[in-house]
Image 1 (cartoon, rainbow, N blue to C red):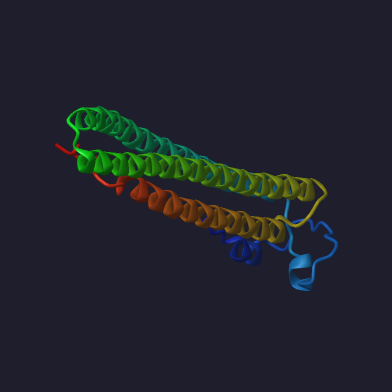
Image 2: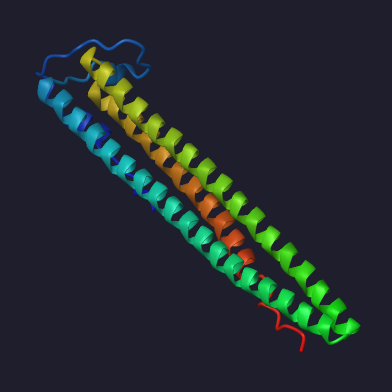
Length: 215
């Protein structure tokens, strides 16, 4: 789960000593905070704060991407196992049909052919489900990559704003909140993908147990 990071920047700003040199900040609505004093150490601490939060959220998004990839691999493996079992079943049914045909058992031949058609439908259905799982996982990964890019873009913009002299006690809390939002969105995107892949996997595993050839 994405862990949200909180900052006490507002509290810190209120406790700063008044003798520190104030740096003008444009575009701030809160005039009290506009005149709050901060120095180089405050800006450097702010840079560290936002960098730590960026790394925290990016690492967790990367973990979500790995989980998504691993889940897809499991779905594909289960689909292949089911397909292999059905191929064996289909081969056995063909052999049984030939035997029943040689024996002149027309009813058994009809049953064999019906089972063969059902097996082919099942194989095709599993293939479709595997393709759907692949598309879903690819979509989730692309979405998580965008979430990660949003985090990095917010970080870069914040660093530029701090370099321009923006008040760290205002700039960083907004940036941390934005990064937290992107992290929470990434978790939601991953959870949605997990649910879809789990449903697909259940459908694959619920394919009828291979039929016993007609005697």
